[in-house]
Image (cartoon, rainbow, N blue to C red; front, side, top):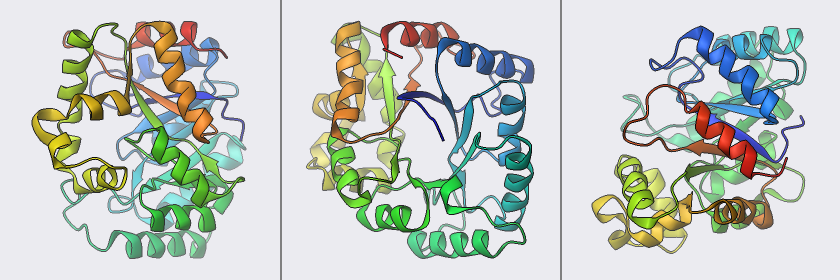
Length: 285
């Protein structure tokens, strides 16, 4: 699938409360016209959430980023995937993940449960081809599983060093499409507080903090919403040249595609369409 160098990650495009179905469709059409090749539907979105956006556009690839294995039956997911892919070949990616203990009441043995879920997708009456699914992989074991049983990995809340390590594990051929957060502010006193408020919820989830520890961070970096060092490695902020450079660091580290998530300001409401337009202007297509 031709994802291009950049895509948009957003939790409302798949059906959040902050936008209407019509607005989501219009936003997808605009993003396609702006040159973005892929949309990643944040949150545990179903295959059916991608269908209206695919139907309303001509070439946009839509992916779940991610569908939680605890919330969606594998056989049903496989059937819906088959129907959507038959109608629109090459335009849907099934991104799946084990989510977090704080978000899933039946969370247990995430790696083994992911293996079981992949087995169920393969055994479904209409299996999901490995080439049309990616895993939300952070640690080495899950990255190896993504390499062996999917098209690749869609890591969330990572930095270029993680991308470099992930590429070494995935090898040269697997898809590597990390998510990256962008704060469209030019000064530290405006950008870091926005980033810190956004990051604080994720620092309650051991999957992410354990991954940061593997990357060389410590408990000190997780206090009070995150240290400046942590903020500056997982968020892009600054002038246009700085943001371009930060995004390119992921590509230089081995990413094929970067899913960009705009962090909204305190007064933002609805889809950040003006911010997406600015991103399109500052990034080379």
